[in-house]
Structures are given as C-alpha cells and as structure tokens.
Amino acid sequence: MEEEESYDSTIDGERRSPTSRDNYDYEYSNLNNSEEEDDEEESSDNHRTKRRKHAPTLEDRITTLPHSILLNILSFLPTKDAILTSVLSKRWAYLWTSVPSLSFTQSYKTATAFASEVDDTLLLHRAPKLANFSVQFEYRSRLKRRLDLWVRFATTAKVDRLSLHLSSHYSPLDANGYRLPQYLYANEFVSELDLSFCKIKPIGLLHWTSLKRLCIRKSALCEDVIGKVLMGSPRLEYLELNDCYEFNRLHIVSESLRKLVIDSYLVDMLESEERKLELEIVAPKIECLEILGGFYMKRCRIKNASALVEAKLDFDMWKGYDSDEEEGACEEFQDIMRDILESVHHVKKLTVGNWCLMVVSIMSMEHLPSPLSKCQCLTMKTRMEKENLPGVARLLQSSPYVETLNIDITSSHYVGSMFLDICCRRSYSDEVKHWKSGETYFKSLLVCLKTVKFFGFGERLFCTKEAFILVVQFLLKNAKVLEKMVITTSRDMQNEKRIMLPEFLQVTQQLLSFPRSSPHAVVLFPYL
Image 1 (tube, rainbow, N blue to C red):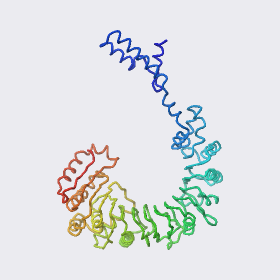
Image 2 (spheres, rainbow, N blue to C red; image 1 turned 180 degrees about the vertical axis):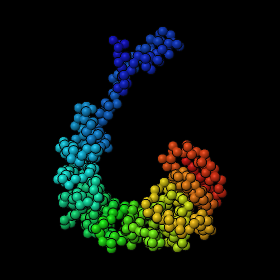
Image 3 (cartoon, rainbow, N blue to C red; image 1 turned 135 degrees about the horizontal axis):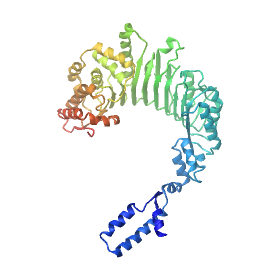
Image 4 (tube, one colour; image 1 turned 135 degrees about the vertical axis):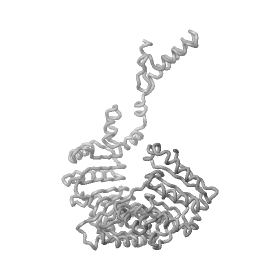
C-alpha cells in the first residue's frame, strides 16, 4: 500500500512515476551508502512523498486568496474570460458577477449577437459599484435602445471610467452615430470618459462634476458644445479631440485643464470652403499642448498659449493641389510653421515631428529666420536623411538653452511629406554642404548640452548612415559640456541586428574614433 502511494503522489498537481527524480536519487545513493543508510533514505523519501501529496496545488493556493484580491485579479481580464473561470470550482462559480470592471469587445460575432451576450451578462452581474465599464463594437442605429440601457446600468452603478468605443463600416461622419442619452450629461461620479462615434448634444447645461479626463473621437463638435463641456466640467485636467470636426476655434479658459491633445482633423465635405481654412487655438492656461496627426485642408494656428511648459508638434498638413500650386503651398506651410514655433518659443520641453522638421529644413535652405526657443529638452522625430539635416541644424541653432537632446529615428512620416520631399530637393541640392557651411554659425550655441539620446539606431541604416554620422560627429566635436551620448536600437531591430552586425560594428568604430570637446563625454551603444 505504501508503495502504491509513492507511485500516485503528486507535486503541484503533476503525477510522478516510479522512474522519476525520486527513484533516480535513490539508485544513485546505493552506489555510496550502506544498506542501513539506504533504509533511512527510503524512509525519508516516503515521508517527503506523503508530504508533497497533501501539499496544496497552484489552483488551491489561488482559491484561498481573499475575496477582494480574487476580484482584483479578474478585473484585469476581458469579461468573457472572467466568466470562463466559473468552471474552476464552486467558489469561482459566481465570483465574476461581483467583479467591479466590465469590458466587452465584439470579435467575429454580429453586432446583434454581441448585444445579446452583453444583455445576458448584465442580467447576472451584481456588483454595487463599477470602476470601469467599456464596450467596443460596430454600432447600428437599431441597437440604440440596448446601448442606452447599458449606459444606464453603468451610471446606476456609479461607474468611474466609462468607454464607448463605437465604429461603423460607413463614413465616420455618418449621421447614424450614437446619440448620448440626456441623463448622462448630469453625472457626478464618472471621472474618465472615452467616447468614439458619438453625438454629443446636451439640452441645457451639462454637469460632469467629477470628470478629470475626456477623450472624444470621430465626432462632430461645434464651439457651443465644447463650451458647454468645459463649463460643466470644473475638474477636467485632460482633453483629447481625435479625428473630430465642425469646430474652427478652441477657446479654452478652464482653470483646471492642464493638457490639450488635438489628433487629426476630419473634413466634412459639406462645410463651406471658408470654414475649412483655419483652426485657431486660444488656451492661455494649459501647460501641455499636443498637435498630432493629419490636417487636410486645415491650417492650425496657436493664438495664445502663454502658460505652456510642454509642446509636441507631430502633425502633417496637406491640401489638394496641382503642379501650379506647389510653390504657394510651400510658402504657406513655412508661414504656419514659423507662426507656431513663435507661439511655443517659451516652453521648456519641445517635440518636433518629421513633417514639421522638413518645413524647417526648407526655411533654413531658403535662409528664412526661425524663432529662438527657450526649451531645455528638445526631441526631434526624423527619418534622419540628408533632406532633414538643415532642419536639425536650424533647430539646434535656435535652441541655445538645450540640455537634453533626443533624436528619434523610428518615427514614421505622413502622406504630406512626399510633397515636402519635392520642395526640399527643389530648394537645395546639396544638404550636406549646407549643414557643413552652417557649423561655424551655431556651434558656439551648444554651451548647455549635457545629454544626447538617439532612438532607433540602425533603423533604415543604409539610408540614414551618412546623415547620422554627420550629426554625431558634430555634436561630439562641439558640445563642450556633454556628459553622455546614448545610442539605442528599437525592439524590432533585435533580430535584424545579427544579420547586419558587420555594418553596425563598422559604424560603431567610426563613431568612437571621433574627437570629443568634452573630457567627460561617454558614448553608450546597445549590446551588439
């Protein structure tokens, strides 16, 4: 009987055979011990085997955790996965019904079948308070009543974070978008709202007294609605407008709002030409502004942002044009870019994207002035090609107080950059010569630079090598207080690095051979 028990013993739920590690240890001990020692060893093995047999399995150890911890674990799972845990044991059978987080995502089911699943789940759910409620599916106008009930369910449970990620096969400007129920505009509990493909049309005043973070995607927003949202959200700190349209002026005087993100601007073809032309931003009290994405037929200008500490300009403007309009478009882009740089000249942290950098390159090659910047941390997102060199030089020239310089080579470029490529090549044919000719003018301005970081070393190495080497050589030669230069690769390059190892080593050796004006400067490379 004792022998049978040893064969059936388990460790953490795994069956052990008589030819496993226990028997191996037993046979090995026979070579060096006496029979008496063998008996003691066998007795000790049997004791350990019985002890392991009664040890709790991994599943048992999780099940014995406190109720609150189990609910917290389940809250990180999609709701359909949390429901599947009900088959584990009696304790798990109805545990998911008390999880304070509900997340539903339509996969391969039809919208109607997905809605039925959500309905069934909410009928069984019994948590009195919800921390998070999120649905993501392809919206149909026939499902409005059911979606209204879901929103009612969430608000009744005093939800903290509410996300409605809706989509449509039709145009995002489609008139069949989901119209938010009026009772949602009077909510004192929600602190985060994430809305996509929703019609925001409050009747009367709006009361989101606890709202701190608001993201609106693919929605029509007139200035009146934006004004109501800001007035009715006295604690709002973060506002993001992503692929929205219909507004032409953002006048933000909120005392609480600290960060404004405008990511792309959709064009409603029914708008008049006059309404399409310009987006004006007046936000004298915000501290962080990000202008991202694509702006087709829309000029973006910053009229007042005097309290800004951080600005990110990673956008792309383009317009319908023919060959006769190319020169005029280039001049227009330069005017807009110069105006925006002037508006953010006082920020401490500045990020300039690839399209903006190309416009600055054209300004530099045409010997046009660029506003001086007071930024201490400058980030440039660039393809690091020869056409970008004048822009890199001009930004360094215009930023004498920079202490930290980040150059991100991994950034992608937008469609409009193709047009700017043509403008760059027409403006100047030898960008390397232009870079070298300007060295004597701005090298004396690098008196504060202490840290340089390159992200994406090796990204498109054969295309970027010449420009990359020129920039590194110049910085090492002229940054007199430089402490460290860090050169890293992207995660996507880890496998390619082995294939391109000889090329990497060659570039690395060349960079290490460059003279350094700072005696304390060190150059750090990724592991090769």
